[in-house]
Structure formats: structure tokens, C-alpha cells
Length: 168
Picture 1: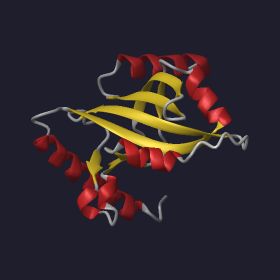
Picture 2 (picture 1 turned 120 degrees about the vertical axis):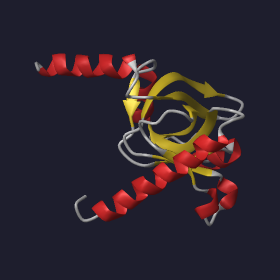
Picture 3 (picture 1 turned 90 degrees about the vertical axis):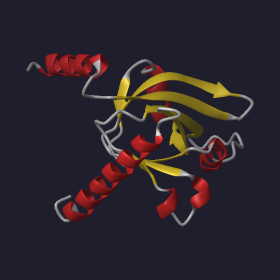
């Protein structure tokens, strides 16, 4: 990571500037509904299902879209193959005023403007609110809400539980 520190610093600053722009535009609706489609190993989906109601942290930058159809395209067609992977559509609700981790729209910087991409900063924390299979869409739906780690009881409680488990 040391090699990429200048790149990561620049990316962080650009996400922050883009987030500030989103804040200025959020007068009509302070909530964003984003989507992400992907194929996911069975064991990772099982972890999400068994931890419904819990918080999770994403350890990478997360590419999302405002267009559900784009996300479904990335989730792929469910041909019911038994290859150890599932087709998953994440729906992510975000309060634009949440400032602990930046996120920004990349549409004006993207070669694929129709994707309406929003990039979320690594380390973003979510609460998994529901996991179910949609027979209509033929994908698993994982509903999540972005958690503001600065003001969240869930984050503080989870941190305390981890410290207790580690004996600190």
C-alpha cells in the first residue's frame, strides 16, 4: 500500500470532493438508493443470510449504480448451474449527509456513462437488513443500509463485543 499512497490519497480527495458535490445536490432527496450486482460464492451468501441484522465492513472500494437494470446485468443470468456461486443483487440505502466515509458519482468521469456509477470508499460500514431470493428476478436480494460509524450504536456495540472477545 505504501507504493500506492499518492494514488490512494488522490482518490480519497476526489471522492471527498465528489461527495461534497452530492451534498449540494441532495436538496430534493437526502437518500440514495444504489445497486450492485455480482456473482458470489455460496459460503459468502450464507454468511450474509446468517448475519442478517448485523453490520459488515467492506474492505475494498465498492462500485455501485443508480440503475437497477445495470446491476442485474452485472449479477448475470441465473441458469441454475451448480458451480458454487449465486447471482446477487445488493440494494443499498445511503443517507447523503453521512460523512464518515466518502462516496461520489463517477458518471462524468466514466467511459460508460449509462452505468450511473457511484463509488464507495473502502471501509464503508453497512447493516444487512434482509436477504431473500426473488423468483421474479431470479437472483438473491441483499438489502443493506449504510451506517455512519461516527454516530452508530451498532458500530460501538460491535466494537465493544470484539474487544470483549479479544480480552481487551
